[in-house]
Image: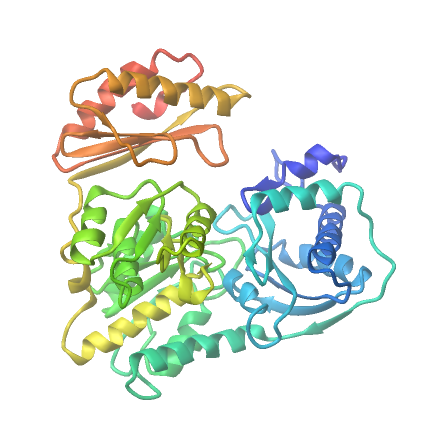
Length: 497
């Protein structure tokens, strides 16, 4: 068993979450041991009491389908109870639903989802919420630093089982019924299928769509299975998207959804089998969010296309702000804009994280799916399909990503040096223009397109994204950039081949 140190605890920080190895493998030791989980959850209670200035706390706990969830939940509940907390055990639950426990029905002080999103089966994590939303990265760091000296308490709390997912599903059904405005079963006559990837998203088919009249036969992998035997539950994964496309085509569905493990992200598929993700999903979410908010600002991550900006600003009458990669970054930026009097109804990352202001700026794949279902019901009354809503979105002829590993421990400093050098190189080259409105890395506009070099949020990687409206240009840019990167001996250029 690994020794717990302050550094080992701090290494579990993954952006605004806590993640680590939860099942021993041939190459990995368990990081999220029972002791570690108890320390972190005890520290969370101490931190939360200070923040709220109250000692009598109520915390909801849920988990996704990972096979380590039961052990980790037991350790978390043990710690909470030892500090006198009233615990609501919500069982198998989506991440967004755990936030919702703080604002509807039982209205807890905080909540915890045990999840590692789309990461491999052997990993797991802790995601904490207060009524203000998910924690910030600096707050996670505070809790992990506090955890080192935290032990179990000697108070006596309590535990109650609570089926909050039924409450949450009823909440989503009510939103669809009111939004569609065509009776209590507005989805009759529609065939809508769901690929849950053996995560927890099967509820959307069984407890949201079916009760409202939708035919969900043909849905696949609705059964929770933490080994993920069919495909990685990740809407960005090519194999997962191919599975969803096959589902829709084989079942002759009108529409299809695919969720990640804990349902904070989603992707869609037209009846034709054509997927709606990345730029297309941002465009569709913008259609929804900007309805009644003309001139509003949509905050996205940095990887969106020029065609998307044109669609949002010229077709929809809104404005796009390209911000940093990372769903919490775009959410926090949208919140900041609204506080400053700038109408910003949507924060969305191309990975599928979408947060609407009307829904607490919560990145909830099921909520966005519910809003899309409302559109399906409304459009069907007029004999129209949803594809028409984003038919004017211009898409590039070519788009690719090359991930460049950095082979040094001080990878952040080294990566920034590479980015600065590329900026100088681009400024001196004819036909390349540095994008002025850019918040991470360097984005270079070239004839017919652009490319972006940035430092990964978590890993020793420099992702390079290239996009162009003309076939063959990406290959030319890639060849020139490979020569440029060859100057740096701590970069692995294998992926250029």
